[in-house]
Structures are given as C-alpha cells and as structure tokens.
Image (cartoon, rainbow over all chains, first blue to last red; front, side, top):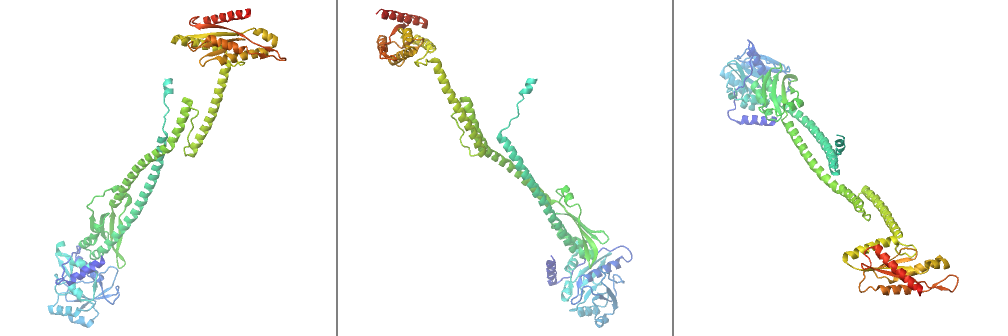
Length: 181
Length: 405
C-alpha cells in the first residue's frame, strides 16, 4: 500500500506538468476561522515533511517572506506540539540567516521570488506559497482560498528536486483534481 | 367392552426395526454432536478471523484517513477509507474527528443477509483511534456484517443435512446387514423348533451359526432335541411291546383272542368287498385236560407250543393263526384259491403235531393229537359267529370220529 503510493508519487514526479489543484479543508465560521484553517493546514504540511539529517521532532524555523495574502497571523498549530518558531524576514535576509527550515512566501516582487526559489533548490527547505493558486511559480505547496474555502496543491517537480521527503498520503491529497470538488 | 379391551393387540416390532431404530439414534446423536461441535468451533474461529479482519480494516482506515483528519478534509477522508469499501464483511464505516464529529461515512449498498447473526456476532463497531505524534486526532469505526459468517453457517447446516441423509441411508444398510447376520440365524433356530413342534421331526438339528451366543442357544436346543428323540424312541418301543403283549399269547407268541376277533372281522369285510373266499380252521388239542392232570402243566405247555409251531410252519404268507383259548387254535387260510389246499394243510398240521414229546422222569413219550373243523366264507356263513359255530361243530365232529377210533 505504502509502496504503491510512493511509486505513484514518483511516477507523478516524472510527468512534465505535475502541478495539482487543491483539495478542500473545512473552514469554520467566524472572524478567525480562516486564520485557524491556514495555521492548521501549514502545521499539517510541516508535520508530514521529513528533513534529512534531522530528527523528526526537532523544532523548526518558519520564515515569512513578503506579505501573506490569506491571513496575516501565521502561527502553525501542529498536533503533538512540535514547536515552530515564526520569523519575518526580508528576501535578502533569508540567505544570510541560513537556518530557515520553512519558507512561507507571501506576496513579493517576481525577481525576489525567483531568486528565493533558485536559492532553495537543492537545500532542505520547504517552500509554501499563498500567492500562487495554480502553484506554477516553483513553491512546493501552495495554499489557495476561494469562496471561503481553503485548499492546497502540491508541486511535485519542486518536491522532487529537493532532498525533503513528503508523506505520499499528503502528496495524494494534493493531487486530487478539481473534479472531486 | 372387556372383551375388546383384552383383544387390543400388543404392539410388536421386528428385530430389524428395533436395531435400525437403535442405530439411527446412536448415529444421529454422534453426527449431531460432531456437527454442532464443528459448527461452533468453525463459527468461533471464523469470528476470530472476522474480528482480525475488522481490526486490520480499521487500522488501514486509520492510516489512510490520518492526513485527512490532520487537514480536516472530508474528501480526503473519503479517499482514505475508499480501499476498505472493497473488503467483504464490512457493513458501515465512519471517520470521526477529535471532537467526535463525523468527517465522512460509508454504508455498504448490500443489505445484511442475517441482521440477527450480525447483532449476535458483531454487537459493537470496531473503533481504532487515529494518533498523530502521540495524541488522538480522530477515530475510525468499522461495523462488520454477517455475510461471510452467514455463508459458513448455511454451508454448515447444509452439510449437516447431507450427513443426516447419509446417516439414514447408512442406518438402513446396517440394519439390513444386521438382519442378515442376526435375524437369519435366529430364523433358522425358529424353523427347527417349529418343525419339531408341528411335524414331530425329532431328527432335525440346528446347524452351526457362527455367532457364539446363538450357537450356545442352538447347542442347547440340539441337546434338548437329543433328549426328546431318546424319549420318543423309548416310548415307541415301550408301546410296541405293550401292544404286542396285549394282542399276543405269551406262551406260544401267537396272536390272542382279541387280535383274532379284529382280524376275522377285517378278513370278512375284505372278502365281502372283493367277493373272495377263505377258510376258517378251528383246532383243539385232544385230551388236553387229561395230559395236564396226568403229566403236569409243563407237559401241557409243551403240547401247546408244539401245536402252535406246527400251525405256524404250515401257514402261507397271507394266512393268520391265533390261540383263542386254553387249547383252542384258529387258522384263517385266505384267500381260498387254487393254490390253497385246506385238506392238505390239516393233514400236515396233524402229522406234525403227532411227533412224540418226551415225558419228564422216564423214557415214556406222549403223542399229542388235535381235532380240526373248517368253515368256508361265505358258503358256511357271512359273519364271524356263524363261521366259528360251523368250524367248532366240524372240530367237534372230528373229535368224535377220532375218539371212536
């Protein structure tokens, strides 16, 4: 079962256009419903990613670059209490700090984004964007909020290029095409 | 009313039916016992497998639905439990989140074949908590149904029914076999007993039957028959002796008066039927009283024995002689045809009788003589009294003439 899922993930990586449309998470009503949903989703994604040469339960640094579009209060909640420290950095500071495990890409200049994506390539850094609904600009995971619903897509090419390992069940969730919704 | 009550027949059964009933009972008991044991053991084992099956299904569901629970995503949860819906024996699935709300659910489109059995075997759903980093984030619940169990129970019952049928057939065959091996020898014993009772066939014996108990019974019966046969032979010879004694004279061993009366009546009847003739001779020893008085009874007896021997020697095959009184003898010469010559016979007898008899205590001899009278049926009479009278008269006349000589 697990093997076949891995296999399907690898096959998906080999495809030329491997960007998947999002599935749907339940967003609760209320002012901070969307914020909670985003944090839950980001936490979920982080919890299913394995960094090489690093214990599974280690603390992670999440660096926010640019301005988040869906919610401003990014504070990932992870079941089991894995601590995630949130930092807000300028695009230039990322390569200086070097200890960012996760890059949360908000809205920013196209040149900055391309530079960051290029810098991430080959490094054990997870990239999550909330300003790229079709997930075409090189981030590994892309959040999208449409009509009060939140979902995420997976860029299998981006994941395949990096050393990070993502749970195939999550890849599969990210592959669910729009027809299901 | 009373009569009818006494006439009520006693319910009888044959040995075969009895044996077959016993066989059937025992075999049925054995088959039912083993069948129920196997069925119960099978149901227990199957239930264990079904439980394991549900547990595995629930674990698989928990694994598949885990990210969906993390992302709170009903569609992904549905995909996560999708593989479970193809496993047989699952009636219903549910994925609950950490607050007990239903994220997704699935109910089998196939109706439960035996809801009662399901209720009995799977009263509660199998619930597996979904853990993520050590904390419970949801629950997967799996309800089993009785489809697999139902097939097994149905097959088991069918097999039981088949066994029952085989049992019945086997019982019949066994009973037949028993009948052949047990009832047949018993029947042979009964046949012998019946033959002996009805036809007095005391020479019949029970043959060896090859069954120890029956052979013992047969042996006892044979011994009893041996005894009976011995008694029967003894009684028959005894009766013959008695019969002979009753109809014969012990001294001369000739038939006596009673035998002669019967014989004469028979001869008359026979001669009358066929229109034949016969001669009745009446013989009487001369001076017999004087011989007895003068020489003693021993000499008288010897005279009587000599007379009887002479008469017997002169007889043809069909003729009859008897001693009917002290010194009186009768002879029936029957039939009176060309071969018969009563005159010659009389002469021969008289000749023979006249042989001398030695007297005790001396060289003296005594020459006995007899007088003979004859009567011819039917010329001289057609009944025994008339014939005897005529013969008696003839004898008397003969005695007179010999006395004159």
